[in-house]
Image (cartoon, rainbow, N blue to C red; front, side):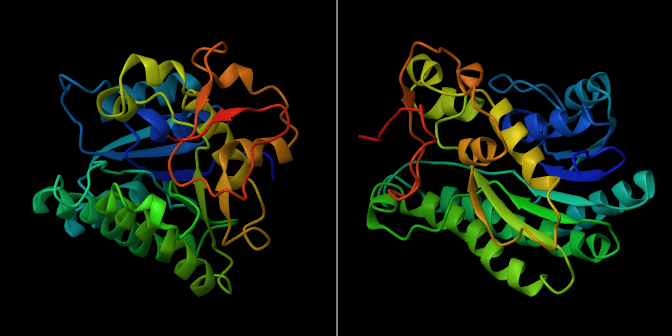
Length: 289
């Protein structure tokens, strides 16, 4: 399968950034997109709402259903999924993209922020997946995709931001468990993670502003890599922890400069990239300090 035409995607956190990029790539195929996110009204520090994202999806060629949904609320998740099924007739793909981030150590992380990251990243991913699964079991070539890192249990990923790392690895452990649980049902469960920082609001607001943005890639690379994964046969490709540029290189892509915010700036590595997962030939990434 090389197209998502007619497929229905339920994407959490799809009002901006990586979630929106995944939605727009699928929309160009003619997919149906449920944009499940919290932002209904414009936010002073964050671009995009579920409604602006829906308009972008329609312009790109897809059908859109904007759904206000806080994935911390089980009832809201159930209702959002029911609305999606009522609108489009089912769900073929579940993308768990919504995430909260705070890169602080134990003393710099208040308990409220710890709870937020666990509720959105780990618990939210589990809840959204749980309630999509009955519908995915009825689909042809069903997929669940987590925007979460490879499981590389090294202390360096935890020492400066234990709470965030625990919450993101919780998403990846959902991949590990659900891929085995759902293999017989033919539902693929995989993870996708960016090799470099991605030019999103989170990077701009939390990781260093303009300098880091110039050293980043655009969200399009994640949209394109997700498309490659989601068009693979679900019974043949599951339980994988993928990195965006490796997925694209293996699918034949050789020009990665087009994804750079500033092709002249050295790329900055994202967190959680294992030492034994080098970039594709010709790609140079500055390691984390």
